[in-house]
Image 1 (cartoon, rainbow, N blue to C red):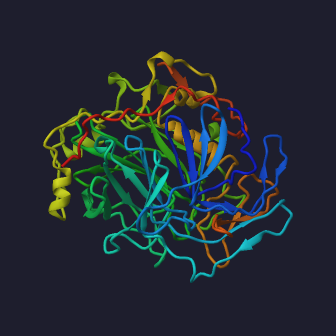
Image 2 (cartoon, one colour):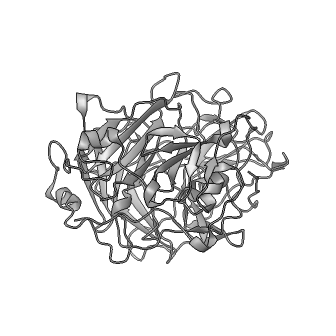
Length: 506
């Protein structure tokens, strides 16, 4: 893999929003770090104060390999989207070409020119930092924001480091169903319980709440800094969210190393046995419809940060989990075809009924749906095969030898978002995605180990309101030094086709 520098006028973010379509990658919002960055050859990159906020969207054109920034169109009604936002839950519907950013917080920002300089900290008092309970929607085609206040009886006024996951089999060009869960509440400091999840109906722009269940009564512990992806049964009778690792908000020596499936619409938690790598502050995405590819992260528990909290640099921090066989694997079996498409794993269908192809018999929560609206949302009068999350252009299928997983990504998978995201969000090796402590920001290590000193992860603030089908090996016996990822030659990537005539699942 090859490193690629980002132009100096493009602000480097973390905890913001990032998504990819056929032509471009988009970056908006998020936090900036007060440490200097390193170029590929080890030179310090000057880093002036940033004046960008959510009103500015950074765009990377994949074909031309060029960056640009543009002021987004503000809502025609309701509140503008101009303040900073970070640490919220992000989801993208490629069929509707809409990005969704839910909750999180707004806060201060800081940058400095060189690692030995004193960081210029643009502060907000603890009272001035507020949770963002809204749902921000960005329409890629119109380049327009929508800012909708959510029902705070269901949602919170600011939850950090949770997840919002669209169910693939429900997505269409007009909407879909997303599940929100996990994270840490800004207003109370409490971790969100896994006994209750949020349901977002993108067709009607409504939120619902639903209780979950688990056999034996032992729910997954609440957490933040985890990752989650979803896969739908071939017949759409169940949608399975895979939740991997994360961290507690109490002082423990290590992050979590567990993996759970939340099966929808039974809303049943199922623990997946096995040895899973300990991880927090990592990212994951779906590859070829059946794999969960994870990137980066740390191992230490809550409060363990700095140089002692080592990055996952084995195989560049990339790992691959087969969601059908429930195993970590070193092989990727090319773009999704019928023979190797996602199948419901036995550990799941033994709990919800049916078989590997679907036919789930538990199609409602054990205690029933909480409202008639939720019941209607998940009643499927017509079974439709869920659209694939990825699509490769047959005329362009070929193998690219740029290191294992990248070969699969160039073959045309949604995992491209993760890999390019690694370039833009984690172009430097991160030591810690620290939780924010406002007023006096919490210490964190340099994202690129520029000088070994601790930096500060703080919110962004504005001053003036401006493939083929081969089997690809992804691990080798030789442990390589960490290197940056490059995302230049990706013209083979194609977005999922819009599902004509797709309708809501109710």
